[in-house]
Amino acid sequence: MLTEEQVLKALEPVKDPHLNKGLLEIGAVKEIKIKKELVSLKLAVAQPGTAEQMQLQQEVVNAVKTAGAESVGLRFEQLSDEELAKHGAETEESNSTSLLDSKHTTFIAVTSGKGGVGKSTVSVNLATSLARKGKKVGIIDADIYGFSVPDMMGIEERPKVVGQRIYPVERFGVQVISMGFFVEDNSPIIWRGPMLGKMLNNFFNEVEWEQDLDYLILDLPPGTGDVALDIHSMLPHSKEVIVTTPHATAAFVAARAGAMAIKTEHDILGVVENMAYFESKLTGEKEYVFGKGGGPKLAEELQTEVLAHIPLGQPDIDENDFAPSVYDESHPIGKIYMEMADNVIKKIES
Image 1 (cartoon, rainbow, N blue to C red):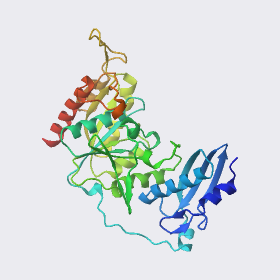
Image 2 (tube, rainbow, N blue to C red):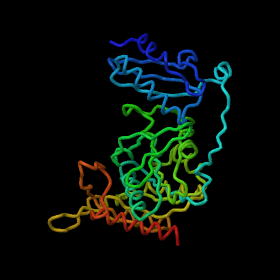
Image 3 (cartoon, rainbow, N blue to C red):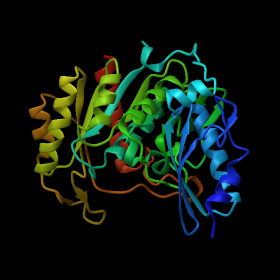
Image 4 (cartoon, rainbow, N blue to C red):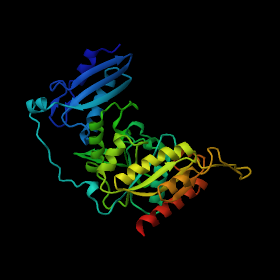
C-alpha cells in the first residue's frame, strides 16, 4: 500500500510556479489521505485559481500516480501572508483586459430555481445554435459543484495554457471553459466560497477569449446561492434565461431565480419550458408528462415571454463525433433550439 513518505518523495521535484520553489520546501502539503490506492491532497500555493494551477495540478497528479496511486484528489488553498513573505512572493500585474470590460459581448446567464430541469442542456444547445447562426460564442460552465458542459459536448481535451493565459477549448464553434477542466479524476469540489469566487473571476480575466465575442453563455448553478449571487454581482450587465419544467413546483422556485435577476438589475430575456411534453414517433400524439402551464405562468409572473417549449427527447448519437447532449440542427428538437436562437438574436440585436 502506498505510504505518505512515498507520496512526499514523489512530490519532491514539483515546484510552485509562482515562487519557483519546491512544494515541500514551502510547506505546501497540508494534508495527505490515503485509502487503498486513492490519494487525496490539500495543497497551499502562492496563487491558487490561476492558469498556472492547471499545469501544477497535472504535475502533481502525474507524480503521485507514478508513485503507485490509481486516483488523485486535489484541494487548493492559498499560502498564508507570512509564508508568502518568507519565500519572497511578489505581486504580479497583468496587462490583459478583462472580458467583463467588453463593450461588444452580450452576457446571457442561463439559470433555474432547482436542479434537474435541464438547464445545462439548454445552455449547451443555445450556445451551439447561436454559433450555427454565425455568431462568435463562448460558454462558461459556472455550475461549480455540478459542472457538466464538457461531458455534454463530448470534450476530452484540456485548455492550453501559455504563460498566464488559458486558451478555451473549441467545440461546435463554441469556446468552452469549465471547472471540470481544473479537476482531476472527477474529484468532488471542496473549495470554500472565496476560492470559488476567485476561480470564476479568473474565467473572465485570465482566459484568452476570442476578440469581439458576440455572446457569452453562463451556465449558472441552480437556485439563488452564493455562487449564483456572486456571478450576478460580478457581471456588468446580463440577459437572463430562466429554465423550468411545466410542473407547478419547478415554476414556483424558478420565480426566485428571476427575482434575483431583477434585484441585481439584469434583464430577463425569457423563459424556456423544458420537458414540455413527449411526442410519440408512431402517432405524433403529445403527452404532457409533467403537466401543463408552468412555463407560461412563470413568464406571466416575470412579465416576459416563453422563448421555447422543449419536448422530452435525446439527440441522435454519433459515435464518431460523440456529444451526448448536443442536438443536430436537422433534429426536430434541434430545429426548436435554432428557432430559439433566432428569437434571442432578434430580442437582443433589434
